[in-house]
Image (tube, rainbow, N blue to C red; front, side, top):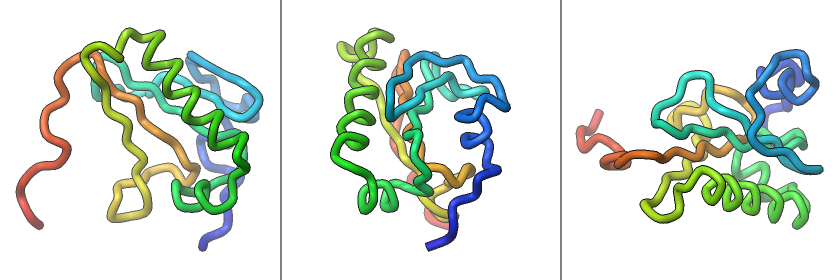
Length: 123
């Protein structure tokens, strides 16, 4: 597995070097609005620990960190009134998964019908 990059944009946000519109924060998690939203609600939820991807997080995170991440998603969904009509969570991983920032993060998207998960075309 690759080494964690302390200069990725989310690490800079966690250190306060780059501003973010925070919507939730606790001891283990920070959540903020995506700067290029793909839905009326588009929140990024990131662990404060140095995890590159969901598989890295799943293997190395403490039970408290894992619980905090899922609780943050649930709280955000409730606060943004997404639970009744539904919402989508996405964790892109690696090059083929479309991960752009090498710090594990979950996208919480909602506020409208989001359509199919993936296009049906094969490349």
